[in-house]
Length: 393
Image (cartoon, helix red, strand yellow):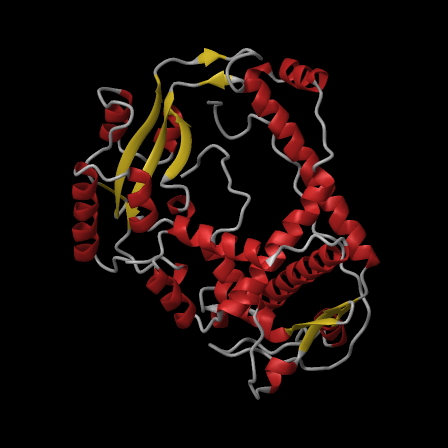
């Protein structure tokens, strides 16, 4: 579904686990491929095995179905991201903004709680992915350190009243509170989603129907919607927000694919704070909660609730993105980077330096040539306008 922009900036537990899967070393494997260096950053190695693990995760284990060109492109993009992440982490270390052990523990515990995982579920997830708490903590340390580094510079950003007013006057047409609704949702999908870290996953139609009926009974019994969503929903994007999927115009609800009878219910007799019976849409089961309802479309003034604050925050976020891109560019230019993977591709254009990936195995370089190269920082997309993506609340 397309929702208004309400993206969490902190890392979720599922993301931490994914990063740990990508970033942890392969341990004591004797496979030569695990000892192949893809790049170094100021002498710190990034192994080809790390790139392959990330590729395996992104491709859902189906990287053997990709062409040689697709594999080469994916490897370069993944390695570029790993290099940038290591560069920023090393810069954070030099700036002395690394987190304490207590802060790392607090982040993992917070995200574990928000994901609805029990301690047993959490340990099971680590075991299934052959991860250790040490590797998870190492990636959490990097995430917090990089955020601290970015915050060190962005904390100096200021937006004055004149800038806010100028933006509003130039973009009045964007500030409209459209007829529509804000929703939260609990989703149960009969497909197998366990590979995405979903706990208590229903894997067929019968299990999905039984689960959604159980969810509905819990809600009817007075259970908190957000709490149930965090523990039962099979949608990784919304479960960490207690099912919240944001605000939609009435047309947006139609474009999102909601059936007419559901939209008529939401915009008609349904009361704010109540929830629907289980609804099956495109094979998945949904329970919708109506968080807010707007029955009329109205133009918003600068002093309408939330408008000035929304513009200020959006202008601040735009500047943060520019500062983060500038920080990355400077840090990359200052770093000593040896990108062996790229060098191998240049030296072996016929096969791009790598054999096609085999299922479950990493490809090995066809040559060991190394060269010093500083990849450019990834391009940063221009920020959307403060009101892009939906109506203000």
